Length: 275
Image (tube, rainbow, N blue to C red; front, side):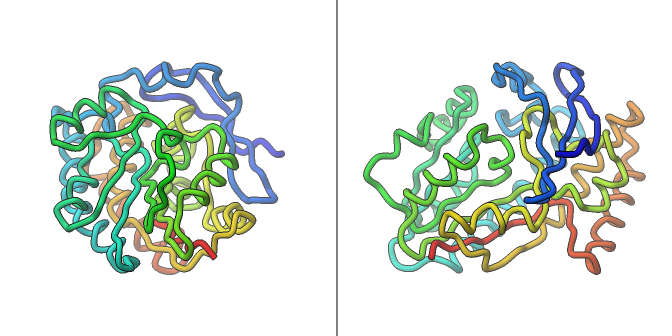
């Protein structure tokens, strides 16, 4: 396994980590993996566990989040087939599930962070703390919105996902793409590396290769257009210690323009069906 890049935890501890390249799967692996990962999430700046709107980055995140919630529900509805049962893993503060519930979905959510679960509960969405608590139930759709990259036991978790999905059910996964232009531009400052919280860093080919042995077929890949702007804004802050809003927006836009040809967007949504 080759050394690919040295980067650091920009948001919490400032500790350095290496990214190793698995050339067989074409993905990167964070090294070393800390024994106590939970302490790297202990930050008010970890936005998916809060509803903070204090900074410009926070406000941009929530603006994009509002726009994307309805789109996400429309996306999964294309693969609905009767029961409309949905399991969302890494449900954060529950906004996606709340939107899906309004559209008639029967929902179950899992979120390990207690603070996020409490905020979700305030919205009337009760979340479980562990996937193992979902017993004797199968779902038509399972979603992981920027969650797969956080999971320590990746193959074991994929096996569990397969067991919780109905026959011909659909798995929807969103993850960053380390082959995007913004990743190559910002290098060790690329915010979507987010080590060591992100243990795995995927390419488009890696998702297909990783899920096929577990009985999944990749049926569609969709770009997440807004991610390049948000990630570039954070990356600029890490790189120059300043916001550099205009420059970040230009890099984000250029990354999307480049991706029209290369198909390497900052993040992708992968639609996989159980076969």
